[in-house]
Amino acid sequence: MGVKSLRLQPQGNVAALGIIAASDLAFHRFEPALAAERAAIEAEPFDQNARAQSASILMEIGRYRDAGAILFARSVRDPNPTWMSIRARYRELTGDLAGARDELTRATQTIDRMQTVPAYTRSWYHLRDAQLAFEAGDAAAAGAEFTESLRIFPDNAMALLYQAKFFRARGDWSRALDAAARSAELYPLPQALGYQADAQRALGDAEGARKTDALIHAEQHLFNVQGVNDRLLATYYAEHHEHLADALAAARSDLRKRGDEIYADDTMGWVLAAMGRWTQARAYAERAVRYNTQDPEVQYHAGIIALHTRHAGEARARLRAALTANASFHPFYAEDARKTLASLGS
Image (cartoon, rainbow, N blue to C red; front, side, top):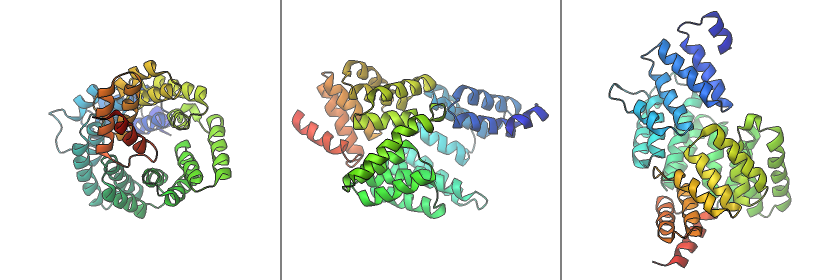
């Protein structure tokens, strides 16, 4: 649709360029998406959304300085909710989680006052509020925002996915299973299926978990269009220490598309750690935390890798940071962080 529109009206067709960029993003074609947004800016230099979206894409490929230069330029006046949400993501990734929460809260409040905004869009803003609250260990706010997101749009597969992650981290396996299964039914991402399998195992349904695991592996070949699920597959396999050769191939594929992006580095480091290749893992872990991202899982990964490469002081600091951010950030890793800290002593 966007390409046809652009052929019919090649000059100044910002709407078509936006559609093309969104399509490219869906298939993780980041450079073409960025080119489309830049063409939109050339066509309409004062289009705030195109500038904000270009900054978002720059973060997807690890170009944080370039993204920050756009998002915090002095010329920016009265940023809209889209701009604020992307700026919140920048703050989150670069170590200012409190600032990210403040900015996104203001964006969500603005969206809630706009009666013409579609339900899914409003649901998405509350989902992001919930994600940031969970990352910061604010369980009450996270739970309330997940509930609100799904009240607004009950079939929001991503809200159900991250609600499952929230319940899973807290060991609430029945509710984790319900949310994960509903999410997977709407959109069978490996992450949702992985949470479903973990809940099935925890609830004693070994046969159900085995079937769900088999479905995840089948998706590697059937549903992973153009590698868009590479990171999700690699993360699940690394966490469960299975199919590690496939995990490494997926992590490398994700890294090729994204460059020096924080979560691509984190995934690659954790896959290598699962394979016992600690020295190689260390290089990626160092890059993953270079902006002091406060995500407790990223801090935990970096801490365990630091420990296995004889950096005990750093290991203590990162494991403490993970637990300080959220003492229940993961159903298995949080307890392992506590045990590891106890074994390390002061």
